[in-house]
Image: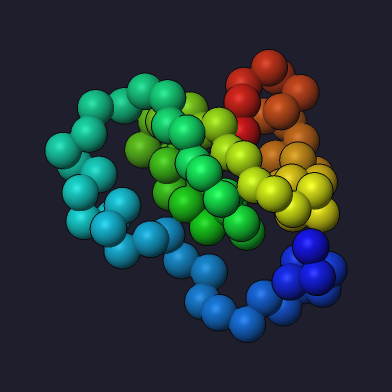
Length: 79
């Protein structure tokens, strides 16, 4: 939790290079992201027509992500 209390996480927030490289081989659908962290892959996956279910041990970051994606969360889609 202490890592996510502020707004500066100390590293580049870009989609994972492996997801970017291999996404074209995966059909759109549901994705389970374990250790979602800052959600750096969520926007990328949503743009590629995936539905994202993310989990993390940090309740602080899950709260921040739920706020960021409030419209999607309230529509019943999973993030």
